[in-house]
Image (cartoon, rainbow, N blue to C red):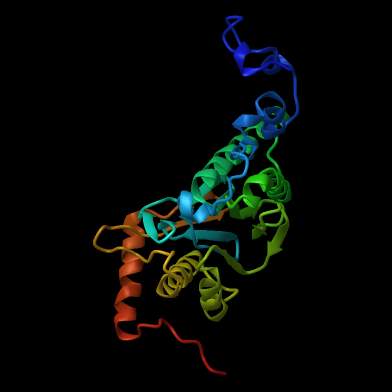
Amino acid sequence: MESNADWGSRGGLPQAFLTPGISSFSEFLKGFAPDYLPGGRVLPAGTSVSGNDIAPHGTTIVAITFPGGVLLAGDRRATMGNFIAQRDIQKVFPADEFSAVGIAGSAGLAVEVVRLFQLELEHYEKIEGVTLSTDGKANRLATMIRGNLAMAMQGLAVVPLFAGYDEETGQGRIFSYDVTGGMYEEHDFYSVGSGSMFARGALKKLYRPDFTAEDAAVAAVQALYDAADDDSATGGPDLFRKIFPVVAVVTDEGYRRLPDEELSTLVEGIMDARRVVPDGPRSPLR
């Protein structure tokens, strides 16, 4: 194995880059430069901290399936202890053409994990000549989360939510994770993050199996609004600064992030309705 010090000393790439390897980029990196992995860093000995206090923390993400696809949405607030660290952070990203990933937890590490996951999927496709199945993508992400366990135990946990369009079944699928890399397939809808219990409660009342993509977007924004109403770490729509949730739809046509112009109309409609009924739409009692 060659160390980073070998870089440039031979006037070219180290031998590891020129040797036919495995289809997993993160496994390659683990052997060549493990300190480049998000979970490869070690905090100083004896350090005991809360990740919430030393680094921005991402909060609520929701996912909803609908016939022919899946939707993933996240609020824009990052907190650091009692402070609002950022008002327009992005927590929902494309993983590849037919999948998306949302992040909650330690924001800096989570963004690194997402970038590595994007590279992992692209690397696999280039080496193998085919794309990973939806199950394969979800499993790869679980492996990467497992690699972050040491950091998670020191308060820097990454909790993603993965959603993809399964090309084999023509359906949208949702996968959640715990900090140890445990993977769970969820059905219909799910949420993660500090406001997840409030968002999930809202979705429990709003979800319908015959949703259109637009219906799912409305339900997701309603759920995030309810989460922001009860969880200080979740940010609501900011009409004055024009900061709206990130909402992404994945169907057989691929990944699409809803533009702010489209979301603005949707959010303003919800806000108008909330002026009349502040707690949002009500489900039938029976």
